[in-house]
Length: 350
Image (cartoon, rainbow, N blue to C red; front, side, top):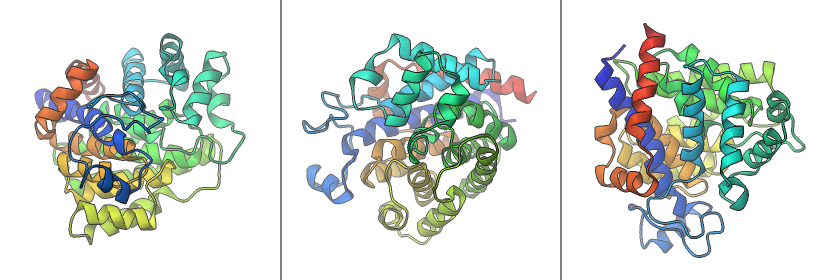
């Protein structure tokens, strides 16, 4: 176990990476890499407001967060309320409570169709197991809405990969009960858990993410709905290989987009985020900027890559001006959340 103060900084860094990557990437959501460069007269490398033709984020200001951060914090609240041992029922209760007191998920196009449908059904009182593990179409429950919000499952288990995987399954099942989404979520949670370990490095984080993806797919096939989808672990290996042989994160992003894709499916966005994490050598700035410019689901990719980098490098590695703006615009108080999660992590690891 790392020292308490360092653990808080690393957890805080992860949460800040989620929020800053989200805020940086959202104005480019749904655009191609070429269109991003055209609209921003080069790479997107600053916090920007939404474009007028952005129906998902219309009216949003520079530094504002989206569903990636919002639902990560709802997940964190479920973890905290359950004292680090959340169940499917606990997660469903947290989602239901949040959805009952907020209308943004109904009133905007920001939230994905799987999440919106799940929140509506949970509010109607349906069994969360049924909600998460049933679907009318193959892509339902197979999106990156699972790995984008799963960070707290890894943050309470520094270096404890198996525990992070088990917690990840519990917190994503109420909304994304498919083997592919669970595999992606377990990969992200396991990677974050390893990033918090005392001697963590980029490749040890990748190894943990691969273990999480393989174990998550197995658990998903046993406990959830199986849909036609690529293997997340294989996609991670491909993304990492492309990243290692690229000259910089931008070239890595171009190659990953070509061979894997960068849009909403969990088997696209999560491997892309891990590939950019590798290409950036764990540097939050480089990973988040590359994610914001890769095209497709840019806010989620930049957010997930930022989470991995932030957990590995800590809050001091997150660009301070960006973080300050995101806190001022959204009033997140992420340090307080980090301190609460760290307290649970220390207790569970004692």
